[in-house]
Length: 232
Image (cartoon, rainbow, N blue to C red; front, top):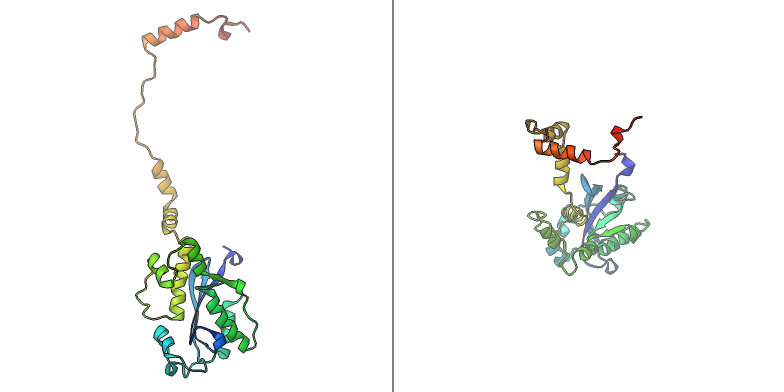
């Protein structure tokens, strides 16, 4: 498949010091997972960031990230170029996109960079609510719905959550349908030839009985001016 026919997307998640960048809250972790045609390539971007402020205890309870842990980590401005290079122009798959986009754009604005347009974001919360109206749409709930392994998720984490979301996103789009791929791979010329091999059966007699022969001759005699009796 030519490279330009592949769809590149980035699954993205952040952890922050709070809920609102307008109140001075900052990003403390960014995790990104690269997808091609909705399948993870294994390439990631991951960074812990010094928010240049304290991390409230209520935030640490959620993600486990402390002031002491972030003390020697780079600030956003030191990672922004690598982050922007990784995401490129790809659509951004985000769970509750408005939250993360607001924080990312606040950080970009602080560094003098152009904001990312909201149209780039694919919000998996909206996808889930459309697909399962009235059902819980949290990442945990969707992982359980799709049997995505949550055993490693003791706390929120940007990279881990992006990896889980990549699996959920694939399921929201219809899943891999592996049985179809495996079945197609197993169809070979030999299997087709074998499937067409039939059990040998002796020929059955098709000669008419005496009664059938008499009935046929009687029918022919009843015909007026048959073609086979005409003289050319």
